[in-house]
Length: 401
Image (cartoon, rainbow, N blue to C red; front, side):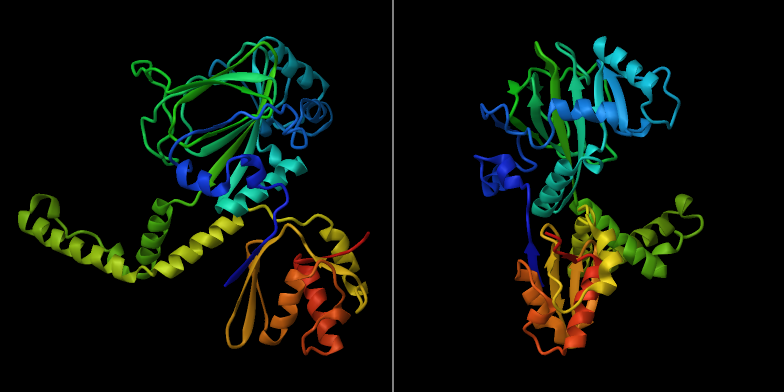
């Protein structure tokens, strides 16, 4: 299978001047990374304080997408009916709490703000992970969350103001979702392993499991928390075992009746368990398991379908001389067998006759083209059918400029 990836706002720029190889080999799931840039405008094209002001004032941020927290306690916003938008009274109530020291947290903002969506697509492509962005706006000299660890890795991008961060050791190495942090006053996190000020333009990477806390300084602080949700070996193994259980009825049989009080039955059960475990290992197909994990990672990447409604409306008017292009930020791969070419993108597979392989390779690399320009052996009618099909599936878009 050949993979083809186009990146817009990419992880490489986000990590500059650290290169991707250094990050993956020395920091990923191993230790924090701190980047002081001395460039307060570095993230302005992603999300500025003015952007957040606009979002709060004019966008339909629903109650499920916003939180108020202060010193680790979640605050309910009075005068805001559950499930409604931030109407005038609710917005005033939100700012009343902010003026008194509460942190405003906008959840999943990448679903509403295109620059953040593109960044998430880039990170998802480069790391084969799920990605989400939460935004934290904290008043001066305040703390939103108490000391805690996350069950996902995070990139912290300071876009306005500054925060004082303390990072501690990890009580649990790489905790999974079923081991969330539980506050315990009897457990002292000890002395921080690092203390730092994160200013506008700076970046902090924290692997899951590292305890941390932060407090804003003399000005309001705005930072993005990019949550990274990887495909773990645990999930691959559990899914593989579940697949065997679904296929093999022996796995669904009960232990012998009365085994709990019968030593001989317990011995027989031990032998049977050894047999079944060995059978599970024999039945797992590593290639299929990794392929399924890859499909899960691809599905976690938000598809780019801007303008697709317009394309669908224009599909029947696409002619041999209509200018088309592959969507520049689509992540795709192709594989081929004796009869078919399989085009993988947007979490799906489009199967086409093997005769289109030359033209598909050309489409994948061309900046702009027409059906007339396809270099393969297809007749004109088949060329038009191919490009219209790829337009309908969202792989192609019409050039409108």
